[in-house]
Length: 261
Ligand code: SAH
Image 1 (cartoon, rainbow, N blue to C red):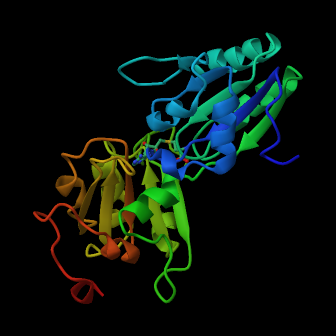
Image 2: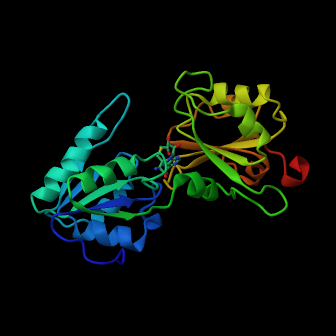
């Protein structure tokens, strides 16, 4: 079925909204928003996209903010099913792509288990798009042949962390850290402990796609301090490609690309 097929009453579309800028949503994502009777919206979803919703559409905030509004995932799953069973066209709108640290599969399974028709409309993930908006390619011919996207929601030494930072350090890939603003000092320390070159370029791109986007560039040794003042959400890039960042923070790294490489 084409992602542009009409959204039927009683069905759900899981829509990736891209990072911040509604212009980065897919054509199919926009079409789903335009048809929705109910939109269940995350705090990272592009607010501007709600302007495309029908005037009579019900917009429900189901954010999961650590110190603010909090809707547990189980409740979000129930809401998707309840609204669909009531015959509504339901759109679950979130930032980025729903399958990258987005719990999209849990929502898909909740719908299929309840025999509710569900489609996935992938989104532009912040793990690639936010670096790009800050001038950084996650790969670059001759420089790096891969990238690793990791969640920094827990620090490396936390019992819930399943990441092998020594292996990541050895991997030779660009590291892209999501949900890692508070844990950045611990993450960079773990990488340096594992032998990462202290001069490795790094950059933090905060509020990507928003008018107040900020880019801070520094070495991996200095990035946590240099970026301590940024407002989340933010993506950190560690690796040679981070030297391409178009820094908006002249107080930090002002070296030219020639000096870095
Ligand atoms: N599913 C999302 C990621 C959800 S995890 C995606 O594919 O993009 C949330 C993390 O995404 C944030 O902590 C931050 O690291 C990143 N993020 C999302 N939107 C962002 C934005 N506009 N600017 C910078 N980082 C963003």
